[in-house]
Amino acid sequence: MVEVKLIGYLAPREIRAALESRGIHAPLEELMKHASFTFSISGVSRALTHQLVRHRMASYTQQSQRYVKVEDLAETAVKPKTVDGDAESLFKGVMEHIQDAYGRLLSAGVPEEDARFILPNAAPTSIIVTMTAKHLLHFFGLRCCNRAQWEIRELADRMLKLVRSVDPEAFRKAGPNCYQLGYCPEGSFSCGRMEEMREKYARLGYE
Amino acid sequence: MKLELIAHTENPELIAASAILTTCTGKTPARLVEELRRRPGKVERLLAGIPLTHGSVLEHNRLVWLVEADESEILHLILKHRFFEATQLREGLWLLSANLRTVVEFILEGGGWLRGALLESIRGVAPTIWRRLRGGG
Image (cartoon, rainbow over all chains, first blue to last red; front, top):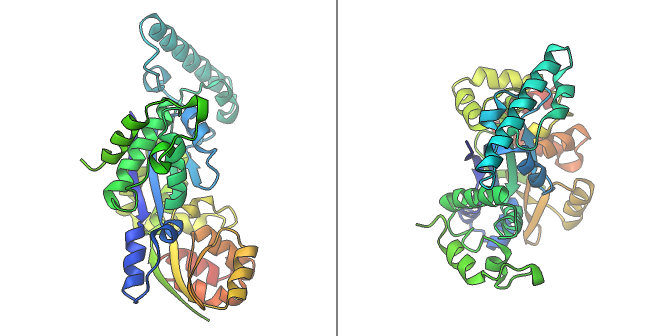
């Protein structure tokens, strides 16, 4: 089951308060460079974390498949909603088969770091992610977008709700690029649902 | 030159210790944070044991300083250590921030004009790391 929690943060409002107590003022966009948010993310797929770590201006610590054995894949693997009906039993059967083969490799003396080569993108994982508020805005711009893949889009929405809960004003303009910029930069790939997205992200986390 | 730590994420060593165990246990990071919060001795042992030169677990935090310095001093700092973030607040006054890994590497590499003040600024925030750096790493 997916779980996303904030385990550490320094919100822009906290830096602003520290400065203002010393009689100093700084614009929000400058504070966003220094503010930082750390998330505990678990129950997501390796397919998601492969996308996540492409955001290079962030820090990551991920559960290792060299040191943590993968167990019960048929139950814990992340299954897309589109995998249903006959596809679901096929998916589950493959996961059981992989789990069985993985166990046999370990029993045959193959170390975890090599047995993991047969594990699927659906294998669940845990990861700690830290980003500055500035880079979070960039992340939300790309990953809250309808063009983003569903799992990372759902994660981005959850992260946005969490940061809005601790600093509502700093992240009021956060969301997909169409919401941040006022226009869609995706050109011919645009989903064409800008109004719907604007309404969604004006409300997300504030209700 | 004057440097003052004015803000930071809560308990960077707790999060760093949770990151260490995230890599090698099946527990979620959030659960590890809650468990380790009740075991400060274990946090200290974990932080005392990691190689400081393999410090990616020290990146999950942020420290923010108010620094009085010349533009040339800050320029030298951010050119040499690109993970420091700087904002000029007014002539000679800067907002500077970084994570603990950046601080540790800066100090281990010599640290230049900021070394002493920067090291002393983390004494209360990251006491285990501070002790190790004071003792040479």
